[in-house]
Image (cartoon, rainbow, N blue to C red; front, top):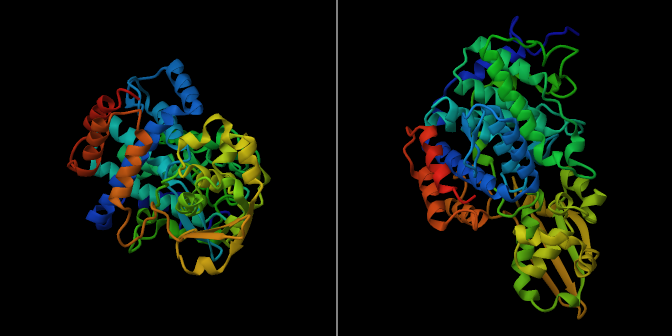
Length: 476
């Protein structure tokens, strides 16, 4: 087999991808796509403000401030400005650290699977747009292209791959940053090639015993991607054959899955229209499970000690089956384990009638009463429930009491689900923003941010937007 394939003529896949990433298309400027992008930016900034509570984010911020750097970009929720690459790192960690940001589902080998969290890379577009004085619409278009590329790169990664989905973000970050830096196609190709050379990340960052790197993995990769674009802007070069060569990334991005789709025309429905927001601070595959538990909570008030058994019935999909088998999810020992736990999440939601950051305080999962309830959760899967909720990860919760009474609750689509034909629910997105930023910004300041992002003119400059954002988040 030739070292170069999946290319047109003598052009490499990187060159084709660079050309694609700089094109414009009317679909990127449709009212619906722009509305969806604004809502996702609002949600992402809300996640970053909430992330100021995280000790992981605080440690990364301290490092960035210690290192210093040109005051080019805003750190969300903080007054000091820092360099572009530092801002991408800190803001990226803030967005991700509470497991609050968006999630997409994609088809892998004929089955629905988690595609990752493309809003991890929204800080790239926001910070680069701030440094380069771009308009809000230019940034929103770059975000749409980032979402499209993120999904396409995930499509050419095998489900059984040992590499983590965040590996896609090196190329995504370089593409978004390069577009906003207005690189020509040659420099853009080098930006992508340089980023690809640094992007491979093993799947262990989010499997097994979870560590701090789960919250930092994408931000570190995105930081490298932006750095690659900045280096390419100075005429430094990368390996053009990095996707095609036998010594390149074939084990990560598999050309047999069809590289040509990476640079195909935009689809009738952009990928960004299928991005769901999380209304609960936990793993995306548990959003429906938590919603089902919350619906039952009022009926169990004062009767938790009468619960004999809890059946958590989830979608019978390879992703869910693998996640249910993870021992650390069944018996969480850390915050990172707990927000991925299909046993703890419904148990605490049933008891408290809520799932916010408060439910993760004081190692709640280790309390004897909670441990007892966690032990009563039986994890199951169902094919039938999958059929009734295309594009979602539905769940049903069945609670049996000592008296023999059975209570059942089912959630096919969680509140933050995005239906491609209409996108996210504006009211749900706004309500979540208020919820996650409560205590960090005033209600008036939160309303100002919402107005700026959702109703501001698309021609407004991103630096001006961030100047207002810094004022609004002075308390964060």
